Length: 206
Image (cartoon, rainbow, N blue to C red):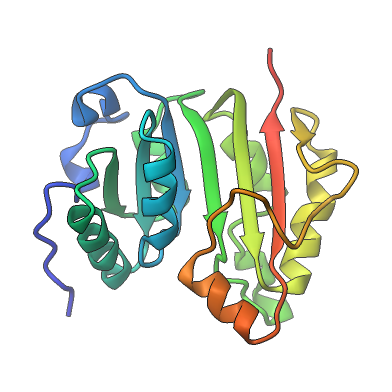
């Protein structure tokens, strides 16, 4: 049973245009950022406080995560976050305009650990090629995972994406990223002795 979400910051995609008019929805033309898989919203709330001059879209496939994120947003009286229960690819293709995103954050997505299921992983070469069309020149792409194989896969494929530059060079990944907030799940994994794999690239200008 789905939890009813009664929040002014919760949106339903079917009520939006294709693409959505985000300037009207936020009431300003500030830069737009997207978190794919917002969990319980702790990472995004802290990041939105740091970047009050940006607007943030938080999407998650799980109703409970959207509910908890909305509660956290409302308690903190933030007006620069909107939350939707959506699948990433469809949402991006239908509700966003090309070159409209200033940043994308993907933290601890489902790693699909079994080899036969790894083709279901969200972040792969095809997804990055798809995503780059929606990133503005100079936009940032952040990826973080506790799953070693997933971290190494993404860190290994990104240098082959010609429209991106590595912001962690000469490293392909790091286990700490200064100024980057840790989500509840990251902290949980770290207390279990796991390391987080951080990847940070920027879309080239022009």
